[in-house]
Amino acid sequence: MVNESSGLDRRTVLKGAAWSAPVLAMAVASPMASASGPTCPPCLTAGVLGGITTQAVVVGNKGSLAFVGALGLDSRGCDVTLFRPLYTVLPTEATLTMSDNSTHTATGLTAGVGTFGQLGALPGTLLFNNINFGSGTYVLNSNPVRPTSLTVKANVVLIGLPSLIEITCPVTLTYNFSVWGVGVVTPSFLGGAGTINFTGTATAA
Image (cartoon, rainbow, N blue to C red):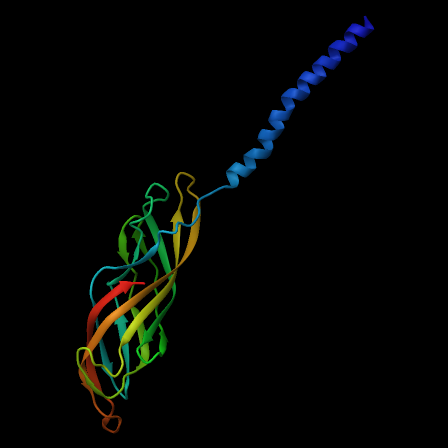
């Protein structure tokens, strides 16, 4: 009687051990599965919505340039099932390069929103101050100095589907300009003053 009872106990123990192994494996695997979440998509790129138009009012051979509405973030190549439609874009830095290789940093950057899967304009106005404009006549295809490119660094905040996990994706957006000004800036001894109207096109780099 003792031997039969011992045999039954051993079978019961072995059966219980066999069932416990998958349960343990599932317990270990579950945190790994839950830890996986959305990743930043590579499809967030620079985009252009229209032509470039900006004006410099020059005094003492110094002036400002502002860019609004034409430069954007393009997510049209993205899989729209991966994230919620509404995203937030937070520009952190914008740098304008002129034809004399001088660089200028934008002021007053503001946050905005966009629609995932579409081309949307960057928020606010990209304003660059204290730019040096050489004296002379500015005509199409011949400028003493002109803007040649602009680079924007931004954080794009996306909410994944179906997880609803929020992620922040840093992007660098570069735009090359074919922009020329028309106007006159007087010689420095006459105040280095004038107005220059720049127009042209931008392309995503």
